[in-house]
Image: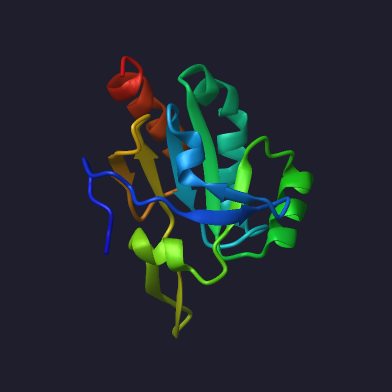
Length: 158
């Protein structure tokens, strides 16, 4: 089952970097920028996380929270946050169930090897919990600004 634009996103609960259970429904009344990324501490994922960090305040001004999700364990997320001063939470989707629900757990190829992993993607969910926009197969450069612009132009009056 994949989520589609205009539909209510099914609630889920995952552990954050502190080992606390966090549910999507905890953020009702705020816009949610839910971004899936392959792995903590890798170059592309670090750049993306730092771009979100650097724009964190701008998202906050638009009543939006940023949440990162990867299959990495809680401890890895905590190290990633500490090393790069990330001001938002990262959720551990170790069994990739939520990634599968969003259709971002994909067969990938790298240097001739096939494996399953996260396809870098971002989902913008409105204050009522409906999916408004999806960015799939994200290229890191310029992506955070693109997500911010979407919220500013399409949802800031909502």
